[in-house]
Length: 153
Image (cartoon, rainbow, N blue to C red):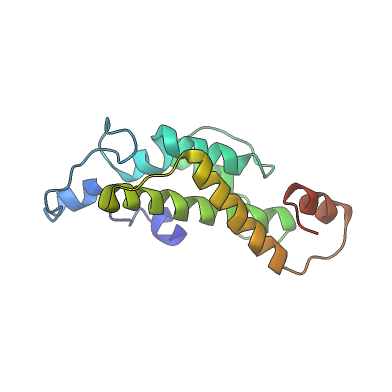
């Protein structure tokens, strides 16, 4: 999922329209119905997604340079190849955020179901927390602090 996002390969409505296979679906944002649905808007400019990214960034120590596609990639790019505790948590948060934003967009578009940004953030938190619980961490003060933040014993 994250790989498709990074390559801008997700089938957003603007891409489907360009291929003329949108099957009559509306081409507006599934969250606010005001702006065209596109890769840039859906993940990085939509106020809904921005709330989710703000939540995710609150758990990791990365600089926040902005809210565009390039800004978010830049924010997370310094951790992609690292294997530190912070990098692992950042990758988990990035992946879960992308997944749940896309899932929420599809639920609204195809099933007419919706969740609040807080509900999606809660799903991200619980998903990442479960992954963190499954990892064997070397004991250190940073790991103990991380476990307190994520309520892992």
